Image 1: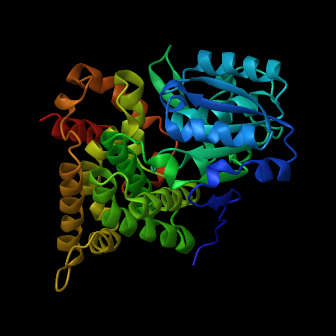
Image 2: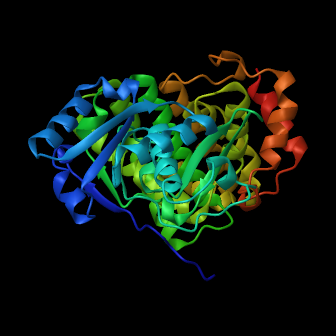
Amino acid sequence: MKDFIFKLPTKIIFGTGSSLDLKPVLEQYGIKKVMVVTDQGIAGTKGFQDLLAGLKAQNVDYCLFDSAVADPPIEEVDAAREVLLQSGADGVIAVGGGSSIDTAKAMCMLATNEGSVRDYLFGGTKTVTKRPLPLLAVPTTAGSGSEVTAASVITDEQNNIKLSVTHEYLMPLAAIVDPLMHIGMPPMITASTGMDALTHAIEAYVSLNAEPLSDMYAEKCISMIGENIRTAMYDPTNIEARSRMAIASILGAAAMVNAGLGAVHGISQAMGGIAHTPHGIGNSLLLPYVMEMNVAGNPKKFARIAELLGENITGLSDTDAAALAVKAVRKMASDLRIPDSLKDLKIPVTPDMFDTIVDGTMAYRLLAVNPVKVRREDVYEILKKADH
């Protein structure tokens, strides 16, 4: 067995209503004044208003930043850092999906490390050297896993690409996982973020960096999503399904943090930079095509994925069973009504974008741990198949 290091330093506090009792957590980390970071959509929800009411009831000194945006651009993040510094807050609570949490991660990091977030993105001139302001995360989606990961994904609008700041210091100190915060998630957000979590687990499971602990988290994530994602979408007030999806998101993220990702995220991230494709929808659309390419790299694990998704693989060869894994993922996405063609996206991805997407994919830092070596022609082929 190869040597490995497994990291999951974030404290996970799970419980229905746990977002209403944040004062003890703030006190544990010595936070005297907290900035609550979210976006306009979440700010108007009952769950968020209840969270603020809980802070008020507990006499917590807080201020509000509700200007986080999807796919946060460099300039927006740099400006948000200034708001945080001027507020006098010594800690942050991020409430929302991946974009809000990623914004808060970058804000906290920039509060103690000089320069623009551009300097810290992959290929930049600076590395994170000082611990950020304390960050707590309250996820409202079950998918990005940003509440336990070390990356903050930022959009470089000048170059039409998404890049990330990645350092273990960016991991939130605690994730407060309250399924009540997920009740108001729109059906397509439930579906697409759930498919994002599934992609994390599958890519981590077949990664060249996979090891026994990451495999354990990935396997549990895959089976829990297979059993619960449809219920969470079509019966949105089902607390048990919401709870299991919330935990599955964390399991997938834990596997991803430690084993890495692969070609799905490489292509999806490049696609998001140029066409602003929602991350989960992009992952869902690309996942079956990348799985087909990757089966040769680890047919036994892909056969196991089929089994974890409820397929009967008795008597089948690994290769034939692996084909059922691809079929199961396609069926899941279809059941969830997620677009399966680049032509059907809100902003269609067109062939004239392919060269830029391929360039961005080949620069993706985790492409090296994909189970098969990815060539430029492979990415073109996947995009052409998805353009049906």
